[in-house]
Length: 212
Figure 1 (cartoon, rainbow, N blue to C red):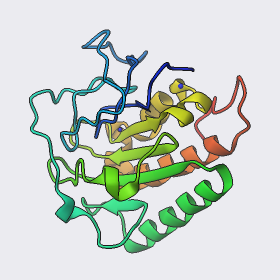
Figure 2: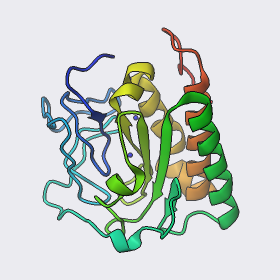
Figure 3: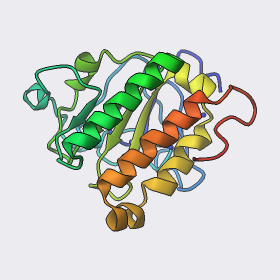
């Protein structure tokens, strides 16, 4: 599903579909259950909604989960927003897709949104569908295990965006009280706009210091 130079890393992961990462992620808001765990670079480890991964919002607890790869859940045409959970209306999907397109044009970073309820997820199939690379942020919205916001962040993104941003974002808009009161769709939309604002800020010591 909450950023420094990391040798030979390709992806920094949170607790949902897991991309490769060669440095451990810990959280100041939760104790790490797997201190020092490292994911190998360029290795995709999927178990659909949860994977064995270190997270900025916690630690993925799905070591025993069976990996999911369901390309049949993918849409027939490309879209940066895939909602297999039905959280978003058609209008919301279109607005988010336009915002994501604007982000890519303005910043060069690719944001991709997957809304799911594990185990109903395309899982590994999104890697090729979205052509995920080190400039990609994969945002997985899944309320199955509490916090609905989970992020997989490419290495180039990780150089520009502080890690604390992702944990603060998940804490503000992803907590169970927020999405149960306002709806999963509100959490998703608020998170996309916060990411959009962050990516547009000049890179510096104080960029993305606030979740807007």
